[in-house]
Image (tube, rainbow, N blue to C red; front, side, top):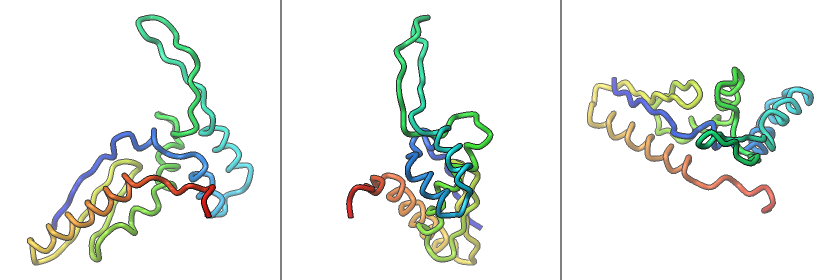
Amino acid sequence: MVCLFLDICGAFDNVISNILIEDLIKIGLPPKICWFVYQLTYFRDAQLVINGTLSLSLVSNREVPQGSILSPLLFNIYAKEFKRQLSKNCQIIQFADDITLFMRSDDLKASLKTIENSANNLAKFLLSPPPNPNLP
């Protein structure tokens, strides 16, 4: 068995709210739940304390809140496409941004190559820009 353990840096901070809400609608969640998640994630106000001084309010339309009990679940829904990036016979175990890719085989070299290809495909997917909803 070959395993690769990954932690996606900045995963929660880079969830795009519109895409998340579209995903929730596609899986059939009731409108009230989708509206709640929209309110939780879209146009969030944040302030920082820098050298004891409170900054101006910053507005973000990305991210699921760090520390929220819903954030890992929302990220898992958002990341539903991860499995499609994997090579044949490569499997994934995921909890939010913590991922394990694994494969069982008698051929160690082939297993290592499959895991490497899957990791490269996943990296390309994660680094690609999100689809622009304004384009046809």
